[in-house]
Image 1 (tube, rainbow, N blue to C red):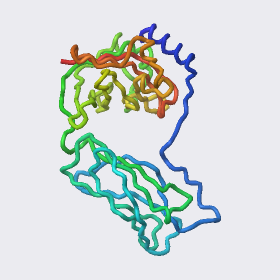
Image 2: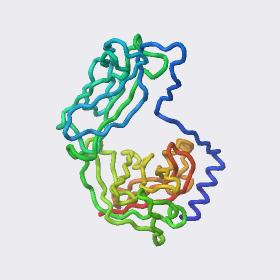
Image 3: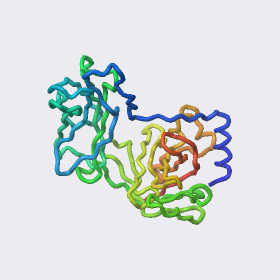
Length: 301
């Protein structure tokens, strides 16, 4: 890693008083206690769903604490941007079952490869148990089939300043030692795509590893500044934690502080020279800890 970049980055960490917290999207169910009722709830508050090429529907599970009697619970659906799914108006419980379902249907021809969309489902408050969530957010999609939402822009190389210093001790997803590259590392045959539905969204595929881990990022059309977060690098710690990449301007403690300007290496897309610069932080899930920081440069033709 460039020593100036490293020094500047960790100086900012001290000055800005970086404080990290973790969160989860799974509801922690504590049990019904003495006041168990027959009302309904979502056991989880969110889910990413993978579509099946042979199907045209999937089900969202709903729970209740008592199994007696058939039950239909009204639900409402708030669609997100680009939604292609039709959500049933009722959650259905069969007699003798503590788990019911909400049916979700779609048309296979509407599926865009690599695009995950959905929305928020809300249970009728009159039927909701206090022991769980009344809302559920989902996105569904696939990378295996569907109309391509991406068009190829070019092919190039991703250069990482000094991975042997900070990234070399990580492992591949398969558990092998991450290769110690020459300084700097130059990863070739990386393809740049642009999203046809959202032209401000791009991806480089593959990112670091060759097992199909893309880097998807957004470009501000006015400033050409680049942002991405929670990108799976394909690297793992010895404890098998996923190593995630984020641009510095996406890191919660630096938002609005123009931290990239201080290190003079902002994440930006120079379209005229076909060059993209990333000021990147690598962390565990939910921005926990900082494993390393690098300046990455992608040049394409």
